Amino acid sequence: MKIASWNVNSLKVRLEHVLQWLDTEQPDVLALQETKMTDDVFPHQALTDAGWHVVFAGQKTYNGVAIIANEPPQDVITDIPDLDDPQRRIIAATVNDVRVINLYVVNGSAPGTQKFAYKMHWLDKVTAFIEQQQSEYEDVVVLGDFNIAPDDRDVHDPIKWKDKILCTKEERGALNQILDLGFQDSFRLLHDDAGFFSWWDYRMNGFVRGLGLRIDLILCTDEMSEAVTASYIDLEPRKWERPSDHTPVVSEFDW
Image (cartoon, rainbow, N blue to C red):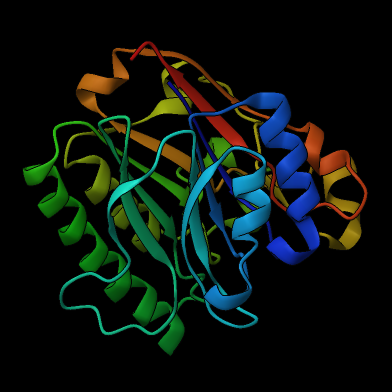
C-alpha cells in the first residue's frame, strides 16, 4: 500500500500537477492540504474522470483538505468532538481497511501569540480524537502538513530556527504526545540523517539553496511500522513550473 501526503498550496493552481503525479506514481492514497477552495468548486469530476475517488472539505481562500484514493473512502469525518473550528483542516476516512487521518495543522504564527495558543489547543483536541479513532480502528495512519519540524535534523539551520515557530519545545512536545499514542514517524524508520526537507520558502530561492524544513509527515501505528518498505520525499514536483512550496512525501507498506 502506497500512501502519500502533499500540501498543494491551492488545488486550483496545482490541479494539473496533482493529476500528473497521480498518473505517474499511482498511490493508493494521496492526502492533500491547503486546497483553498469551497466544496462547490472542488474539481471532483476531473479526478473521477482520471479514475480516482475523492472526499474533501474546503473553504474559500484558506485551508482545505482532501483524500484521493484508488478505492471509495468510507466512514468520512470532517469535524471532531470538542473542537469548535470552522476552518477545514481535518478529514478522516477508511481506505483499504486503513484509517487515514489527514491534518493541516495550525501554523501558530509565533510563540506567545493568541494564534500559537490556539495551535496548542487544536493539537490537544486532535490528539484526543486520534486516540479515540485508535479505539475504533486497528490500522491507523496520521499524515499531513504538521507545521512542526520533529527535531533539529529536520531543519536546515537549527540555530537560526531555535525556539521559532515550527521548532519550539511546545510544538515538538505536542507531536510527541501523538507519537506516544503508539505511532512511528515512517520516514525516520528508514532515514536517520539530517538534511531531508519537504517545504522550502518561496523567498530567498529556498529550494535551490536547500533552506528547508521537514514538516510533512506520515505517522503509522507501531504494527504498521513493521511493514514499511519505503519512505521518501519526492523532490520532482518542487522543480515543476509554478510549484507548491511543499513537495509530496510517500511511504510504502507491505500491507
